Image (tube, rainbow, N blue to C red; front, side, top):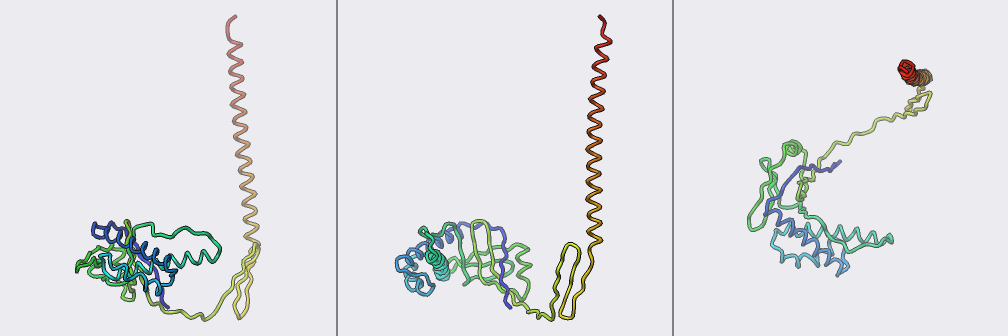
Length: 238
């Protein structure tokens, strides 16, 4: 069984990578525009119309393919909303982002991505990311860069554990029942209920006694104040 997850770390792009983020957003926006003009939402159909028109952008071809894929996902989501009768605005990609599943390498604790014209960017990976990728069964499928983070989509082949039996548990206030295909056992919990009830009553009495003591203390203090005030009046000379 193939398990897929992502590992993310903080990241601040360089000026060259920032330019790629901006170009990628422009390519996605252009692909969305082309998809709306040609009524294309599938990846295959959109690629036919958009790939040639995206060649005017100076970037590796892998990023063009991923920009078209991103746009196809946005258009497919819009079409699904329209089928459900929900009104939608003109779709667009708001944030700066760069996604690719081609042309990158993980080497010596760095993510190496192509910038074009035989130039590459080396992005140091955090210790936690390196630790996750050190598993020989982990395969890096793609990367996603934003203005604040780097995310790697990884997959790992897991051994499927076969179920050899099943156990059911039914819990009520006064009993607990555990059963399997061979039988069931019921445990009496009424004693625990009685203990909890006694504790609640004891706590309530304690709270009542505490409140009574505080009221008596306030009354005693008020009485002492009245006596002191009366004494002061009676002892004053005429």
